[in-house]
Length: 136
Image 1 (tube, helix red, strand yellow):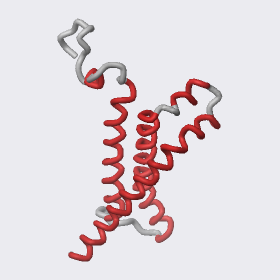
Image 2 (cartoon, helix red, strand yellow):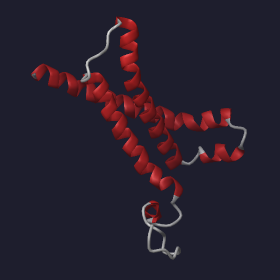
Image 3 (tube, rainbow, N blue to C red):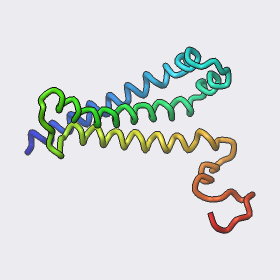
Image 4 (cartoon, rainbow, N blue to C red):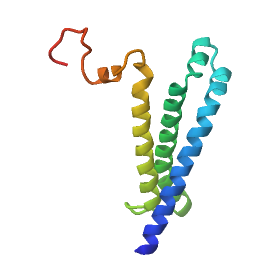
């Protein structure tokens, strides 16, 4: 049991470092990607915004991890012609980090749209004072 725990901790560490490296690479590559792929000048200017880039980078990393967790079983089925057990450690650990990075993406994403006023990110959950409504 001790070997399995140390193996899983190593896997978590490797996946966490991979998440940080991928986020870092995407954070700095997004402006060039947007300038290359988009003909709209507004998209290229949005890609220069740090909070927008961080949110997008975290979202793409979470999506890549989620796709990897789905791909593990398919790859094993094509390679070995047999199904993986339900509790497969690598799939679970990468899925955990997909969730963690996805939550970080959601938290950073709250600040992308409402940065004009302080505490305006709360308007995702409650009505702003300007709207006269009692029931959200």
